[in-house]
Amino acid sequence: MHVETIERPGTATAALVSAAQDGDAAAWERLIEEFSPMLSARIRRFRLSHEDAQDVLQTTWLLAWQNLRSVTDGQRMAGWLATIAFRECLKLTRRTKEICTPDLDSLGSTDDVDRELARIWLAGTLAELVEELPAAQRVLFRALTETSEPHYVDVARRLGRPVGSIGPTRARCFAKLRGLLQAREITRDFLD
Image (cartoon, rainbow, N blue to C red; front, side, top):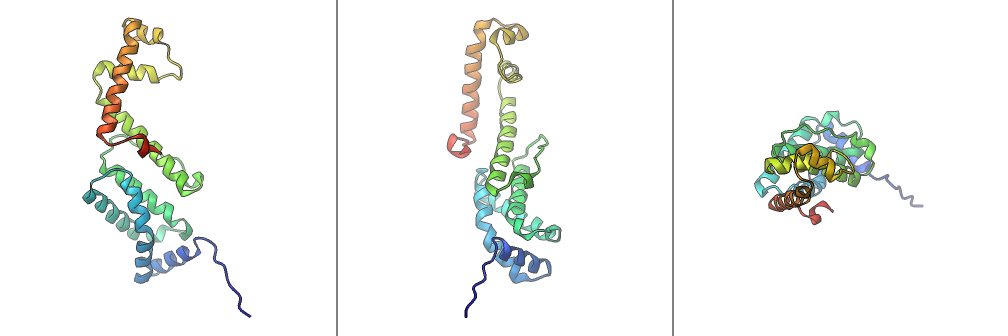
């Protein structure tokens, strides 16, 4: 009689992680083979040059190797590696503001983590782009986004400008932001 055993998803990965932690070079190589395509795909989302993307991939694996003993649940290896790669991409894009990330374990699937990290990255990118706007547009953008339903009359009063100038200035502001996003090749397709 032949009995087939069914492994839980991630069990093989957990065994590879455990073996690599014990110094098994072949297990480490298998982890690299298994997860490099996924990491490369995530890194490509940052639209880095080929050289920079390769640097991020290598740095991710170096940091993973240096911190491999800290992995307590080998079944979460994909998320752990994705987080390392994401942080390295952020460093490379020279983000100046500190990013507060949620507890990634609470988000669930790797896709949920990807969406949350992309949202955080995009929010930081938008903040950088707003800084590139002319001063009047920058002040107007901030005034319009401080509340969920800004009223032009209130914004005009705060800025000491005619109410009729708010709409056209807002339109120029958003057109400039769209241009800056397009210059960085950030489109709706990228965000989906």
